[in-house]
Length: 407
Ligand SMILES: *Cc1c(COP(=O)(O)O)cnc(C)c1O
Image (cartoon, rainbow, N blue to C red; front, side):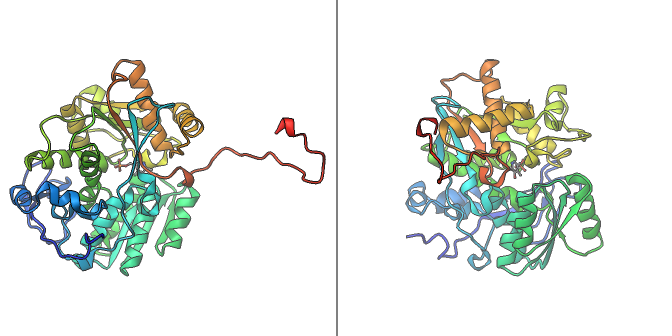
């Protein structure tokens, strides 16, 4: 029985901390960025969590996202607006990837993408802290997840998308009750509008990493992955990196699990995967920079990672470097070929961003960056069903002569 949401479980949040300066901020208050203009990280009393939550207690719970409640910020269960955040499967892709390649298929989550993890948490906290109006810039999936969870608890949402955001995303956002606007610009141009309105007190700014709780939701990818692998980390993780919430979140999760004594010091090599047409993190990584400059004229079929500038750039770069990984760019043709091959040979329909991780993995294999014996996890961040597919338009006249040999 799933009682993860029946009981009010204690939360162990002690405070929030500026990710750049370490300055402390009070928990249970509304925050956006720190005074230094950087993301805030939630801190917990991890010794108390470890004492309160023996690992076998956790293992007896249902496997959904809420089993991690003691490592999450929501205090009151009544503030959780859940759509059923299940544990996502690790699917082997032997033919298109290799014998030791697993895809964590995040397309199974509510609203069809891993944005649900971050937004279920951020909306719960917004509800807990009395927010009634939220605005967000989005390339699509984040807006859809926000709209869905906010609709369930009566929070008003205003969403701004680049005008060429995939049609299905714009429509699902509208259908789930948000007011959605197509903007003639990129996601950071949309973010500027949200910031301006927030400064005027019109709404609460829900941009990536500009509120502290999306990272906490996204970090469950790391917690879940480690539990699924029997309290081990894989050798390498390939993560499609836009704002980098998931990569930063997983890195935080591994750190918290080690502090609780649930895993050792080994870390996976973290590969931040970007599209060649929008690769600010890759450029900064290769130049040895700590921050990434805005990428001009960003373009790629992988809309979810078309993010010219990330406020958490230094956190992404730090995690990648500390892990011994790299930031890698792949071109659109390689992305589309990987999606195609995975569908044809392994029967798994990836989103383009997921395809980017497979393409980057294969590139890393060729260059000797990874070994085919290593255990690798690729993130498929959204269901492939949301994206345009090549036409399939063969027709058959049931009244005519059917040439069965030709079928
Ligand atoms: C948001 C998104 C990404 C990027 O995730 P971040 O954690 O923000 O870097 C990748 N792919 C898809 C499909 C997305 O919706």
